[in-house]
Length: 148
Image (cartoon, one colour):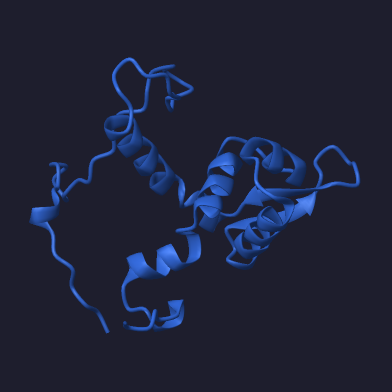
């Protein structure tokens, strides 16, 4: 059985990304951060995750510059975890997973959450890759090119 390469040895951006954020708890912490969760206890209550696992995931997200730690905005002794620019760049990934799940993992009548545009109060349209002219782009219209 082949050995799993470490992130730095991976030449595939998908593999490197999964090595960093492909863990269930990592993505759920990021999801909650997008939903405004900032404190350890709030993450733990929302996720129902063990303290040691949450501590590890928060530490790794900070080390990866996805979250940063800052003093609590209310002046208390707590600290808060906030998304960095790198973390905010994960928003389309979280939305794509959400929309795929909405489309394929729920029946029409099954209750679930929806991502709503705050301005229009309507569901966010399904994400679609676009070519340079604005047309929809499918997997069979793309290829991976190795760069050196």
